[in-house]
Image 1: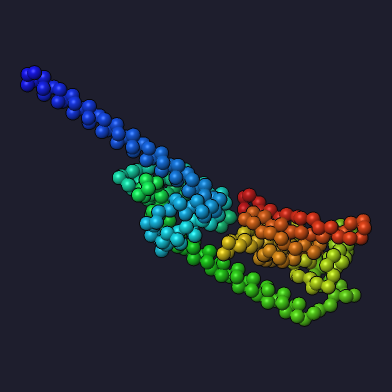
Image 2: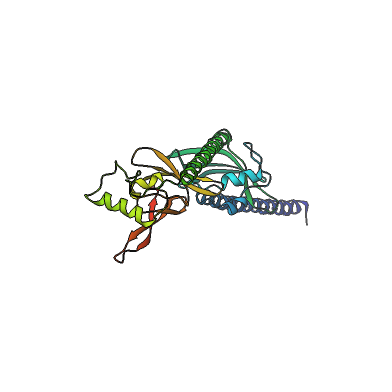
Length: 297
């Protein structure tokens, strides 16, 4: 074999090897991007649902940003975010790091806010799975502020609940009797059909005799407007507006409405109340009623 043929064979083999390497790198890069897109999509769904268990598997143990380590990041991103949506705009992968840009919709102050996020960093960990490792510059500034506002709201809520419980306790200790007295909590604001207010007040006195009435039992249940929910220490509290224009915080176990309605459960979107209605036998039947948060809120 002459020298010219040898050089040609070597050149062909070299080109083939280079093509194979390029194909391998491109295939690997495409697979990495697909895996990252799937992880990002799952993370967004978990944020909307507040799926803390799944969120914990999509945040890198190396996470340390915006004053949060891995554990506090799991707590933060494990909070339910109704209406949260995001869609990737672009991905830039370099070795084990990827920079992601995406469009995001989320509810802030009861309004849908749309923003474009750039520079969020994901890492391919040792197990070859992609996880969030660093926030975008804008989130690094805004998130600590939002966390502080939430903590202040939760602290205020806890203080309001303690005050309400203390007030209720003092009423119980006073042992005030309602016998032969006008119901002091009978609403003078809510308009009702003739005779309806009287029958509702009478039902309230009869369905649970001997128990001191709570202030919010002076209004019809469906006269309340459910305006928001607060999740504090994995317990939901409801924020409602009464017909008198004032805002109140509700928790499970409280009484509300004129029919001895006891709050049995509060979720991220609704309040379940067990009300008592008289039946033809002169007894009271329990019916579960629901106050639901409107979607736009």
